[in-house]
Amino acid sequence: MNFLNIPSFSNILFLFRSGWRDLINTDFYQLKFSEIEFAAKVGLILFLFVLLKIVWILIGRWLGRDNYSRKDSGHLISEKKYLPARFFLALPTLALFVPLSAIIFAIGNPYFATSKTEIKHIESRTRIDLRDVSGSMSFIFNSINKVKGEIAMRSHLKFLDMRRGKNDRVAFWLFSSDLFPIQEDFVIDDDLLYLQVYDAPWELGGAEYFYRPDDGRARVPQNRYLKVDGQGGTKLSETLRAAIQTFDIDATRQKLPFTKSNGRSVLIITDAAISDFSETKFEFQELGKRGIKPYVIFIDDANGETNSNSLANRHELLEEVGRLGGKFFPVSDERAIEKAYQEIDKLEKIKVEVTKKTLKIPTFQKFIFLAILALTVIIPIGLIFKLFYYP
Image (tube, rainbow, N blue to C red):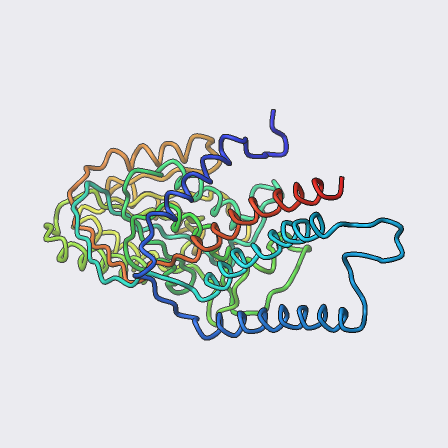
């Protein structure tokens, strides 16, 4: 068992082969550089260091110092062996010009400029993921020493892992007292979405970050708290209103009927203790008119919610979700995320148009690979030469 997670030789060889094929198939005449001036300055500094080293050696010889021989060492070295030895020993040092040059080119931020626009049609489902980051999400969930915000994040990540490769078009927003889009428009990029969900804060609040172990708020890391004035409450209606507008704009763009499901859904990760149920109910009805299915990953713990009206709204909110054909999945149920995945998977797939615009393709990694490749050759050869002439 590979406890250290060290890549095998075959994996390393595969990486080198892939990098080499990518390198030799590159049209370097088409390259452009966005940081050419900075790279030139770095190159000039390196050149001055090399020049200073050469001058230092020449001055040393002029003063009678020679690093390669001593006349009083007791050994006579013939010129026939001395000159070839110096030549071969100097070759690896001279060859360092290749990786250094490659690194300077990488510093110049090389790229291929293109204005290619690719339009294709794929079968997909469309979803907006909404995650609750209100004040109550900072309280410990069911006494398991994890805050509800962390439970919400990890449940969401688990769901995304299950949906990976399904071609879902997803937007990702946070909500507290107001809406905070993270990924505002729909994208088909599993890795990007996963990173955005992982990096998003667990709580938005209007006050500075504080640590209060006396009331259960003892586990929110400071880097997971985002101070935003006026936040901390749980209002969902404005967020759903924006979601409906986004779905309508997308339906117009995709030339889809407004009153059909078309594989569209809203996934809400929340403790469901909202304060604006009457307004939210109206927006849920608007979702129903469009056939958009609501699903709730339910953080089923009332801990941290001080507003009794908000707690009273929980049952009505979940009941409204069910009435519209959606479902809620308590995170205390170990199979809840799997069930949510299955429900989304039941929605029909439709063909949608995806436009991909590529304006700049970075290629610095090609020069980094060239530098690594050169060093893997130069270093062993230098050691071999040294062992051969100085056994």
